[in-house]
Structures are given as structure tokens and as C-alpha cells.
Image 1 (cartoon, rainbow, N blue to C red):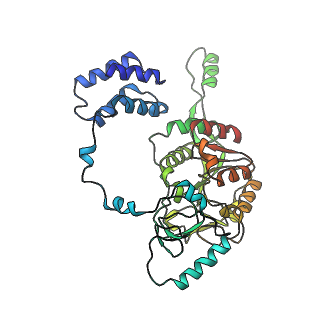
Image 2 (image 1 turned 180 degrees about the horizontal axis):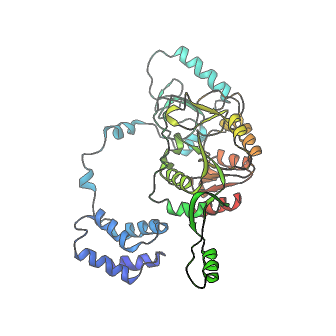
Image 3 (image 1 turned 90 degrees about the vertical axis):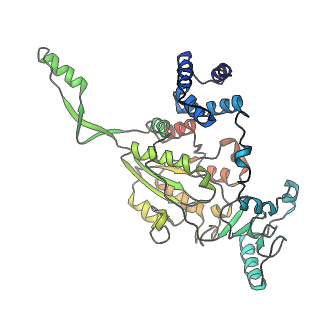
Length: 391
């Protein structure tokens, strides 16, 4: 079985060698992993994989080779959470049924109808297609389906079709100390560099040392120069909350890599799209907002802009006044994005959603068009292309 595993890794493109395979066998003989599929997985990956870029290939081969060896049924039996069972009562519609549900007729009509429902409804309601409730086809409530709805009292998005969210949500700042998996991000970000010598910290001037030593009859004469730093200035905008929650880990890795690579880095958060304010601290985002116009005035056009977000939202949030899911924006988000691009012509958008899936979400092509097609997938290849576009 282990030989088949070794050959499968090579066939999948993982550059594993016979020496590494023998190292794994030696580790198993010393019982560094014993009677545990999880321990064996980490030991095998440690011995056989030299580059994080091959982790995904390794995982797929490992699953194919050892699927069914460890049966988790006994471990899971009796541990199904109650809320999982409760969600079985939610209404899931077929694609044909979803297509039959018609839009309410625009954001203004939707808000007007919600106000009327609040005045009329006197009790809790479940199912159905009119009242504010749960598990139904009404555009108001939670855990149901409607092509354009207002989400009320639901802790996370399911269909990502809400045009308004009736709740105060708390987001958390991305952790810039995350190191695991950031090395490849750093390698890609290093393509965006403009070196300048600054500060008192020094490094060896090798060419100068060689010239001085030769001129000194071969006696070593060390020459030092101020250390070079990356002089590129970067504004990093990070989308947080909602549909970005599944992408927190990869965004933290990117954030951590950017903080270590760029000396002149300023970061700000936004939710879904740009409006009149952004913020630097998610815990204080309701009382310490930063006006977008002040940001444009403070940071000059020599800054390069990197926007990270899934661009998955209602089209109202992009092109309509009042389209934001959290507040009434007096000007459409597209106008604010254009103001940023006018000030910072060197700008890219990094999207964590896999690129083949972009056309499934109406708002992603819209944002890409506003960015003049400077939207790239948040992969190593996409990040490299984005850095090349910024140079």
C-alpha cells in the first residue's frame, strides 16, 4: 500500500524521492506515528513534501489511497448537533422552483413592502411566501429562499441573495501574525519592489569590499552600506464579514505576508463594497470610521492599491443609492470605487473565489468591469499576475 502511495504521489506531480520514502519507512519503524490515521498523515506529509505548493496534491492522493481505512462513523455516532437536525425543517427549493419566484420589483418596492408587513404582522410565522418568518419563500426573514430578500435574524448567509441585512454584525480584524503558509505569498509579493537605502542599519557591501580588499594588497577591508528597504507604498483594502468568512484564513496569510514585505503599508477594512467610509479596527468600526475622501486626500497617487474581496453581493450595492446592506448610502458604491481608481491608477482586485466560478455570480463581472478587468484570483499565479500589473 505504501509503495502504491509513493507511486501515486509521483504520478500526481509531487516531487518525492526514494530517499524521502525510505525516511518515512524509518520513521514508521520507530513508531513516530502509530494506530492513528491523522498522525500518519502529518508524518507522511512532513517526510515527503518539501514545498507547501504541493500540499493540495498530497491531500488528494492521500484521500484516494487511504479512503475507508479509518472509518469515522463510530466516532460521529451520537454527536450530531441538535441545530443540524433543526435545519432539516428548512425549505430547500429545486432550481426550477427558484426560477419561478419573481423579483419584488426593485429595492424601493422591497423596503416599502417590508414596512407594510411590519405594520400588519402580529405573531411569529414559519414557511409561506408573505409574512416575516423562517424557512419560507417570503423575501423577509431567515433560512428560506427568495431571489431578492431582506435577511432578518439569521447568523450567516446561505444563498447570498439578500439585498439588506437587518442586524448589527461584528467582524474581527485579520491576524497579521499568521506565518503558516505565508512563504509563497511573500515570494509573489516580492515582485512588487522598488529598493531604496534608508535608516542606520547596515549590510555588507560585497562589491565595495572586494574592491577595497584588492586595493589593500589583499588584506580584508570590509565595507558596509545602509540596508535596502522596499520603498513601494501600498494601500491594502480588505473585505470582511458575510460571504468573506470562508476565506478568512487565506486572507490572513496574505495580510501577514504583506505586513512583512512592505515597509509603507496602510490597511483598511470594508464590507462588500466601497462607500463614504472605511475603517481600520473591526471592533470599533461603528464609532471609529475613516472617511473615504479623507483617505484619498491623505495618501498620494504614488500609493499602489490592492483590494481583496469576493465581489459577491447584490447588484444594488454597486450601482444604487441606498443599496448598501448595512446603511443608506447617499451615493452609489461604483462612484466611490471610481474615485479611488482616479486617485490611484495602479490598482488591482484579488478575488478568493475560484476564477471558473466568477460567472455564476452576477456582481463579480460587474466589479471586474469597473476595475477595467484588473481582477485576479487569489492564487499564487493570480497574485503574481497582479504584482506584474502593479509594476
